[in-house]
Image (tube, rainbow, N blue to C red; front, side):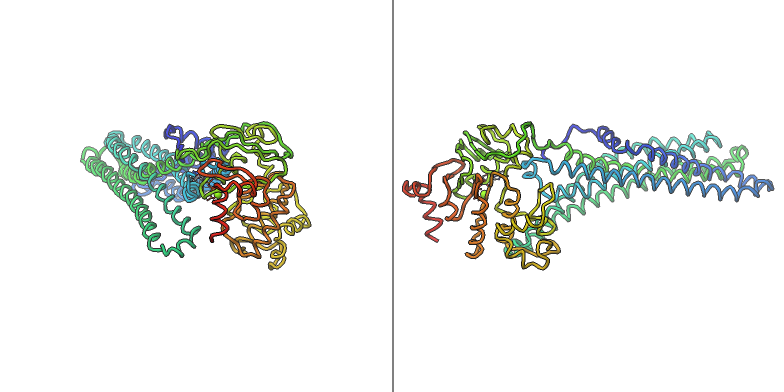
Length: 584
Ligand SMILES: Nc1ncnc2c1ncn2[C@@H]1O[C@H](COP(=O)(O)OP(=O)(O)OP(=O)(O)O)[C@@H](O)[C@H]1O
Ligand SMILES: [Mg+2]
């Protein structure tokens, strides 16, 4: 979101949008044809006034009297058919474009680097996907409808008027530049307002999201009044922006109509002058006035089309700025089937994009195949960051990370990540059954036996078994709710099943009851067998069994060794150990 695309001009945006219409050009052409037919029937309607009055009523021509009512029916039949095909055709194209845009946005979204997600809220992104896409499609199809159909209608009617009386038409036409000036003025204002509306919609979504996700925090902190106040503020802002738009729209219409009516009054005055009355038949005059009145409605819509177009443009800008985000860097070409699991960090430095200074400084260590390396250190010392770099969630600033002696940047990203399973501080479970969650990420079919085996090894089977539908029980929304420890054991089962040579464990700090703790400990031990394990440890038992303990402090490695040697050393680790495990 930070790298918006300011160089996109409205005409660039139009052109880009047109590309989405291109595949449907056949339907689009048909719709345009239907619009032209519709416009022609409008002119036809005004034109019919002339024979109706002059022929049927004044001259009482029997031929005209017979044919006119029939003609009227035919005209409305054609008009109705044309109208249907226009609406259906444009609607069909719009829905297809919406679907395609959403697909593209979703595909773009899941390939974006972690740094992008750090800087955007889910509310903003959801609003783009849900609201802006609708906006761009409906606004532009509405606008196209008006621009093509109404313009053609206006041209047709004008041509008819000029044919009837050139002088009178000329007077009418003088109002056009005046209207044009107002339209131009108003359109600029609309565009700014539309953008603000979209932003404030994102804010509304963002706060809703936070309150929904953080409903526990809201409850425990009793922050209801604060959240309500915060929400009221953005809600109010949204209303204000909307009202601005409504006001501008409301003023623009009567203003333009007033100008048009001024022209009309002049026409009526001039046309009823005695010398004019002689040159024009009653039928022609009424037909002229009818055409003039009929022009007002499409003209009115044409003045409103700008607000539509500008809204569409603002939405398009928001959509394209997401589509234009650079996806995650994947320049590696080396395939990797199954790594040995030898990991080496060499003088790694790292800093997040937010310019808050280096987070990791000069990190070097070696984890041999099958070893368990434990990371300990104060909160914020960079442990999660350090292990995340192995999966290239972020690009390191300098130094190298080697896997089996090869720089990790040389591997295909997917292949590299396939070598590791992560069990994170916060376990995310997806909508679906317990089984779906255990096999998550597996491309091929996994038999129930294997799932059960993994669940058993992860000590998850004992609680899964007791669920109403066992493995087929739905989790989360509209399903069963699991405890923190149970979620972790599902994540462990997931990791076991993936059978990756590297395991990255970010232990939850929250202490579990001893029973759950014992289960998880046993599950982890199964998991760590024959794998290179990087574990961010808070449990003494995990730490003591590690081959090597790395002590972190403010982004640096300050001590390395085994439990016994570090205790003997009596420095950082000994201090941490004393604080964490003895003085509780
Ligand atoms: N996505 C991010 N963008 C910017 N800065 C971040 C990001 N994640 C973490 N940081 C910063 O990097 C530093 C290290 O964070 P990290 O999460 O690696 O610590 P940690 O050692 O895992 O802490 P804990 O034990 O609390 O999990 C912190 O100062 C934190 O503010
Ligand atoms: Mg952490």
